[in-house]
Length: 96
Image (cartoon, rainbow, N blue to C red; front, side, top):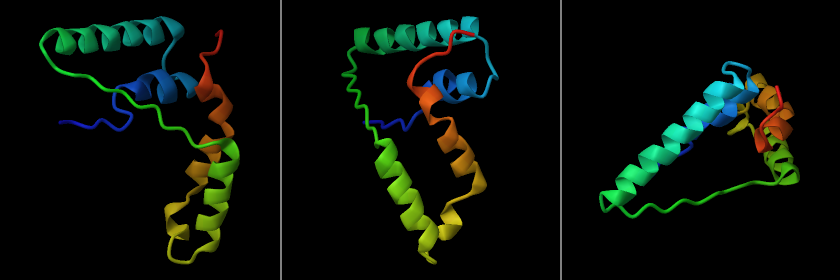
């Protein structure tokens, strides 16, 4: 059993939102993922995918809890807040 946490989907989310890849690369990457997954399934692997999502309100609550906890606030960085601002863009591809 193998568990991938984000793995290759990062290219479609993070790199797209950060403007590091264009939409042609997004499309190509998505096709590569589908091809790879089809190949391993055709080879006899059972592929199970789970989408885990934390609501915007819950994420903010967790950030604020972490920020106020002296044992955990070191885990929250300015980068986390910056990425949170880009959260809406991760839910759908842009038209650019």
